[in-house]
Amino acid sequence: MSGEAIRHVDAQRDEPAAAPATILPPPSPEVPVAAVPVPGGTVPPEPPALGAMAILRIGGFLVLYLNAAAVFIGVMAQAIARGWLALELTGSNAALGGILLAFGVALLLATPWGGVAADRLPKRLVLQLSVLLLAVSSAGIGLAVVFDVIAYWMLLVASVLQAVGFALFGPARMAFLAELVPRGSLPQAVSLLLVNAEVNRVVGPALAGVVIGAVAWGIEAIFLFSAVLALVGVLLTAALPAGLPGEPSGRSPLGELADGVRYVRRHRELNALVWCGIGVTMMGMPYLAFMPTIASDLFGLGSAGYGVLSATSAVGGVAAGLFLGRRGSWVRRRRVFVAAGAAFGLAVCTLAIAPTASVAVVVLLAVGAAMLAFQTSNQSQLLDLADPEYHGRVQGLVMLSFGAFGIAALPLGLLADLIGLRWTLGGMGAGVIAVVALYAVAGRRRSVMAHR
Image (tube, rainbow, N blue to C red; front, side, top):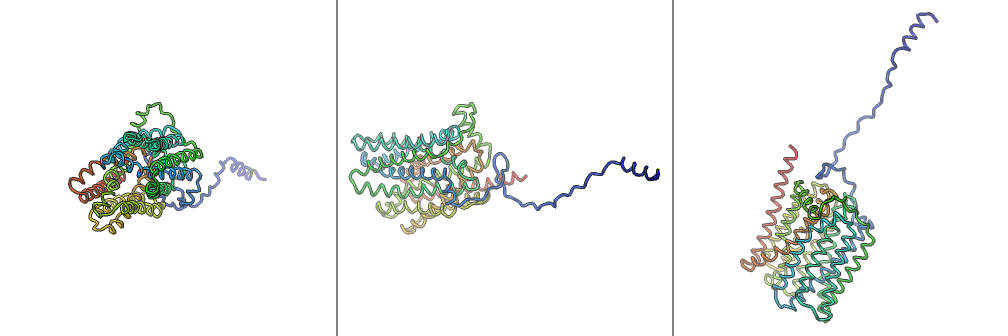
């Protein structure tokens, strides 16, 4: 090889080697995925929603479902027996209001603490304690009737114990869903639990009415049967997982409660959902307390007609739960929430002007359907938006509305005596529409501010 050729090869050897070319894959087209807004930011897209039967095949959820069925059928049955017993003991309609007031005040005071317990204790333990309280209150009244020592004050005490039991049961049950069911299937799971309650709102009172009317010892049988069902519910909870408690924070229970309130206030959408739910329930749900008067005074129906009207509302709720529990994006659930709330208010207004019992039956179907759709979308959004460690306290704040509903029924009843039941129902429906409209307008404003 010549010297020039050798120098040429050496020069090539001394040059830095070129980096190998990197072959990049072609960019894949981005598919927009609707993200669910949460207080902490944006979460991954939801997994495909499960159908109702698939959710019921989840072992933990099935146990929770059967537990709720055992509890609610007993509670709804003894509500009829308790009212009948109070009337027998006192002969006073005010005594019936006193029982409802005792329940409402106790529930209002105890529910926030139930939310704290659901967040800081194993949820299975909270459920077991709550159902045991329900069993003790039912068994106590049943045995007092058997031994003929029953007194009206015992019914008040039992109402307070039941309220405390529900204050523990409600937040723990709903908070448990987030651990048992995939997030994308929460609306269907909430709907199934609400349908469960609506079905038992029909079956429980019907069962109580038949037993009380058929046998002389029907009242005590209903209370003792409710206690047995509650004990069955306690046994069922043994098959549940423990339920993850939150990390210890070092704060007192009062500090935990205050922290939950501050958490909701910090996050505008959570705050709006909670207050809208409380407002709609307080303004609209007392129609249930007026059902005996609606049946007798407005339409001249007896006890059988009262039963038909009450069952009709529950049937509407069951139908809504079966057909409106499908998967939807966060935006769709928000639209259902607003539409269902407005429809509920409009239906209550329509009930106020219903000319006949036949028209009232149709209207009550719409009332029950709209209310259950509203509750389903409200609960599922709250579970979606809240951080898991706050699920119990958020649900506890929502359940305040049911205690407030018991309290609101009394002044609304006085108003109905003063201006008439139809005018009162019309005002209640208008109030519901106003609350939902305020939420919708404020929500649009929040969306505009978020996009700036």
